[in-house]
Image 1 (cartoon, rainbow, N blue to C red):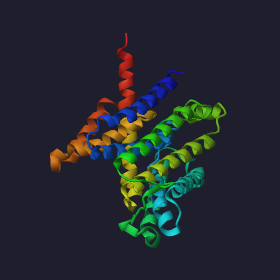
Image 2 (cartoon, helix red, strand yellow):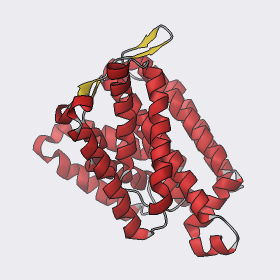
Image 3 (cartoon, rainbow, N blue to C red):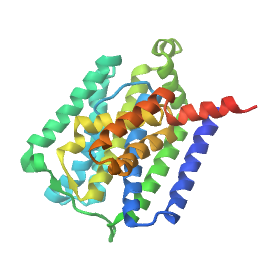
Image 4 (cartoon, rainbow, N blue to C red):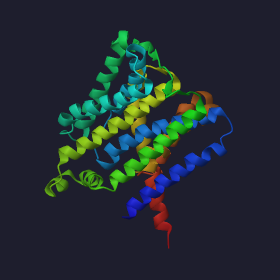
Length: 313
């Protein structure tokens, strides 16, 4: 009950921040950075449902991210599908692929599962690179702007609200899911698959549910990034992007909805702030990440929450 209240409080805090942040952002550049934070936080939130709550490791999350991104590029360009419809189709395609692939690979555990999801992500990236006639090959392809019934979403300010509202809704849905019987089953699987099985929980069903939801979140985020940038390349679905998502989830805190946002904020904003170090920017970023992991081992949000509880009289 307490955990559910904390989760809902985190979602409310996120909604308040999204509403009030425009009052202090001084220029379109900062709106662009905030939009990127919201988009990446949406993808990390989906990954957190799988890793933080269901306890299943995935190193191929960027593959679903890339499917969503290329859906809004290929659909309108080659088949004349409206961008909003291509976005939905991309999410459905990612969810369907996760359903088909997840049934066999989710029987694996630990590093075996990690390698299997890594292979899936690499295969998706290879397909996007090699199908040059459809995807533009290694150079990528332009993405038509999002057109919602006559309203063309263009510029940092409109995308701030589109991505921010979507993130708030996605966080609210995740919070409600985690407070449901499905969420309790996922947490039981995370704690001990053996104990959950003894209690009669269908492991395959619930792990597959988390995998499909994770894929849908990732595909929507990928579509948003492609529509926002106006360009998509195979790097969108690359291995390094998957590692970036995992790093965001772990730094912010596995099993924390607000942690997904904090982790995304850290790894989107810090590289911008550290440009003053020029050639040493990546070294400084790596040192900061090490410090966070050494002193806040459970992730930023869970560790700070635990510290606050311990300090209460």
